[in-house]
Image 1 (cartoon, rainbow, N blue to C red):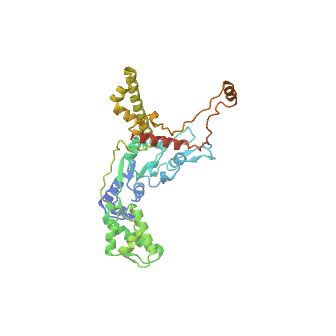
Image 2: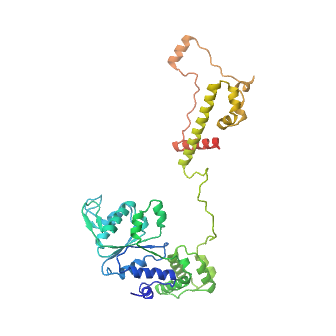
Image 3: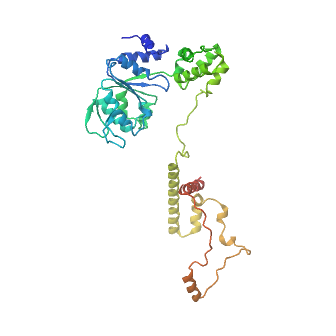
Length: 397
């Protein structure tokens, strides 16, 4: 069995972090077997190195190794890419095509971003893991394959399972051995080492002197959060190598290339929703409907009391709070209609007609006394719904 240090040299892995060494040790131990492996870790931590180590140290090393980025293949064609298709299986399938599982028979397939697989494809993949069988798209013939599967993801798989975006049974089949690669911020002793390696590589690539950091700049480098991990560190080293004329990088220069870091202070996140917190329009509609139902029940109660007692004043006095809840407590609405009529109020008078005139008018125009109004432009159905919801909420709150 090869040592961790020899594996690092062979696969150009930089770092002495204990967590990194443990991940490499697990890859070395599991390589001679055919156990499925799931590599987890944030984006940019170098998950693609582990499947290469496993394949090269296994008995399959002389057969094919195929890396597939599941997140880069459209949902409609991923089944065809992985399992192949028959001629005429779908529009554009002009000939039979072998999929990756057929081509890599006897070898290793690395499924990167496996958490992005559609649920229908997950079912097919589960069958391959269980008994090595698969069906081409458009075919009824079962085919066998002997493939070692190594998968990787930066998705929190337990959250994906809870949200029903990933099958739980498939997760446990893939993660027989789980290898986690730590983020760069947890490997502080490796950050400067990696930066120097990248700076040296870019100096050779672009034929220019190697850049160096001042002591203060090194401290800034170590304290940065590195959300993009090794990939982000490599990009910063390349930018500095190409753009900076002065090969000694100061704190000010380095900070100009680093994105503004947000605060790392802990924050309290409210997970429970309050009663009045609407997360969707559907909840608003439910709230309005429940309020309307409550109002109807209150009106039924008032109606029953009026039917039993027959005394409006007593019912009004006994149910004052209920009436206020339904109709509000606007004093203007309580004024009698008769009191609102003043001597100066103009009353619209409808002229009297004789029987003959009424017959003529009824024939010519039944609605001669109606006022003509210009039709306003109607709002869309969506706008009307929103307006009704707003009015209901204003009324009940």
